[in-house]
Image (cartoon, rainbow, N blue to C red; front, side):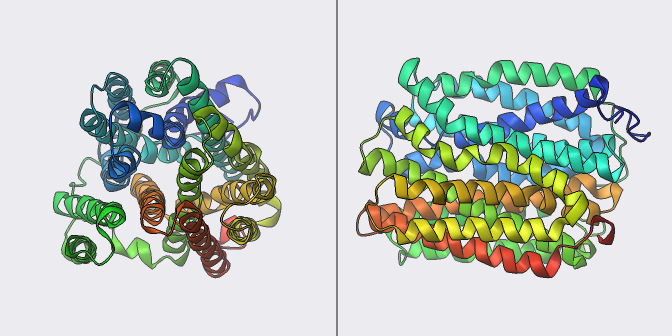
Length: 463
């Protein structure tokens, strides 16, 4: 592989060829780390800052809400202004807002800082995939890069609960955010040195009405799900929020249909591979991050575990992600993407079925295999679904395609966390709420498997 985006990869093992990949993955590492590292810390943060259960959900979900809402904006800005430039902006915003999170004097301040942190993440994520697409144009090299990109997410997800528990139990929860500072500085330095500037589409206008409608739809959906836990599902405010989210989503479709320069060309969605893989991303993030959030609260509130013990308890779920993305990146060149995505979703779905069947208060050893299956299956399917989306999109719309894929994934994360928290708050005890959450997550995984069989190409060249 070569660091130059205009040449094939003559030196797959060269150090220089890996430098752009490491630079891009460092930024993505921070984004995913902040999704999982906070899960074991939020109960302690809530007690320290006197936050309610809804406030705890917003500390977790506010970040993913803004991330999901602005990913398409980040992708559009990357296509227009250059993906490397926007990626670097995102790293700066994310690093500074992490410092603000660490110094938060109150729960409301922390929620606002997390929202800004999510904005920085929304600028980082679309650029990360687009820069890999640009830097590694050869299919084999791109498969390896996407596999390592997914593996970085697995490492961050694996390190998050354990590292969060260790930091909370030793130096305090504020170090959950301070850990981002050295990573952010290193990421910015590596990107500026080793990643070449990206081409710009300066004539492409930014469709701000459409961007606002996306943010409104995601905010209304997540807010309504969060409030359902406190007010109940039949509350007029919850019903109004869900209804307005549907209206905003419909308004986005109409706007894109009529716009001269749409944020997301609807003709791209006619691609069965692109649109189907984006929905698959939503479903597996819904299942996986909903599981992590609800299980974390259950271990701490129902079992009385410390933050560190909770991180250790969750480790089987996230440890499997450390190598399954790399494994799928290697296997896909032999088998194609479809068998890996389908099998990954089936394994993950069966894992959550096993958890739901284990009862309301199962022994921990009964949960190890279900957690490992969910972690392995989710990460195993990530490489193939990522490649399916990026290969189906025109090169000039790499940022937009990445923004769409990661938007649907983060909507899945936000919805999974919000719904899981609501079920814990409204169910007949934590045990029943957790079982229901796992059953819904299992259904999402199995639906993703069926969808993958229909829309994911057998071979990369068919996309």
